[in-house]
Length: 426
Image (tube, rainbow, N blue to C red; front, side):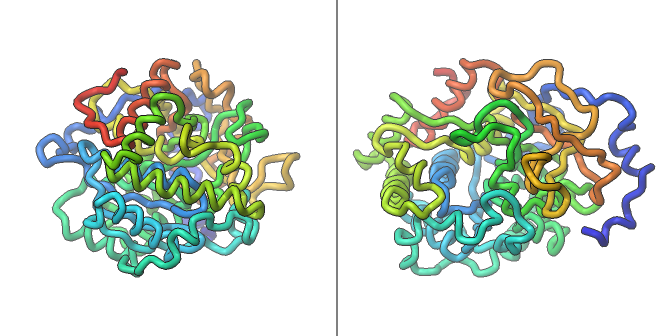
């Protein structure tokens, strides 16, 4: 990153920020209507998507893959790339999941592994802490996936005649960085980057007994890559949408039972694949107290409820932007964001640690959703960073409690294989 310092000037950054001397206000953004001149989805079919996942240690990637596989009405899943501690093992898991779901036609490839531990933050910076709960379920899978997933994704994009690709990442952004830096022409054709990660809200518990603000694991696995993906001097993405942890919730009750019934009856192979891996993850997590997810596995019953859905929320927000339906997630425009990298912060809890999500100085929102009681107090001056941060849209909650219930009800219905015809308002 130091090599970019010479490109950054105060004048250029002031111009980019529209003059940071003024107090920054945030507001709910519209859906993708403002870019309909470039949106050819209606003429050329559903949105082509690349899905980037750290499948294996955590269960929400399993549900997210199950959701996208069953959402072909809006998302045309072209490629799954694994970015994780063990990219080969993650790719084996994804390959098996897709085979069980009857979607072995979807290509899979290994991405770029996470950087060295000293460049990470949070739980991702502790060697061996995260573990790989699904290793026994996947280690014997035949490795039929691509060895260079990023290169194959770049070739696939360049071989297409589209310039409106969507890239959805629900783990660390190490492979995104590789795409931007090594395959810039292909990256130019990715119009929208959707990220599950970040945490700009305060005074709520994103994880049990952890009060926000705190670091978030997906960002923590590679904070530098997340910053580079937002650096307008090299990053070409026209639209960047963040879906932070504040939107996460469990699926329970009748909504969840739909998934179980569809899986156990054999009515939907996608649901069956999801439940197969959820049950395997739960059994492995309960049996091994050394795994980070041990207590989470003990706390949730695969027969009656899901774990908190983080990654699947990013897919739902992406589909809301494409559907033309009334948005349920409350999206706010933020003119710039930054993630603390190793060495930038001092010892927590006196101040934020590596992987904390920062807002620009002077940014405020007139009215926040109920899920986000307050904004993080941690801010930064964009003049002080080597990047030229571009703005993002961030889902800081839902427009109403009814909208939140509908959001997760549709999520469950899709995971169960139900056909969604038009806007979903149960």
